[in-house]
Length: 178
Image (cartoon, rainbow, N blue to C red; front, top):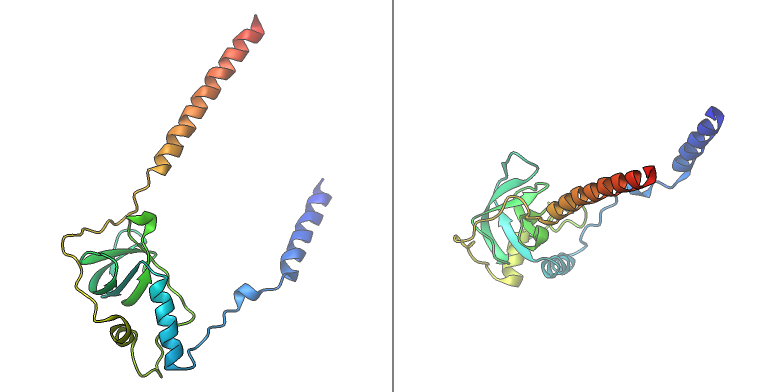
């Protein structure tokens, strides 16, 4: 039995070693022109529910970061937002978790809209193509964690399933003794 396990482990190791490792090499595209940067900006803008300019991150007790919202171009957000997974200050193209929860971090390390040699910043491009934006809504209080009642449903369903199984087992056990 030990020989079979050693062969199986060796086979799995050889399988992983022989696979191409394309995921380990990341190649990033750079915008060849300002027109391409604007095209990427418009694509990101259209694919996002919320486009905001964020201040410096404020660490929280979880993996989320809290940010002051400086400017809003798309969506409705409060003065402060929570971003799951954290992000840096700057422009954030994102959507919400569960439709009403905190923002998702969609950090893209490739296809960066800003680089050192560009003539205009992302904020300048947004102002040129989508207006100056607007102030965040002071009446909205942003949630730090997504509301998910589905987890409670699964937990109570599991407990119910265990209880039904125990009752069925005892019923069958007593019927078999008679």
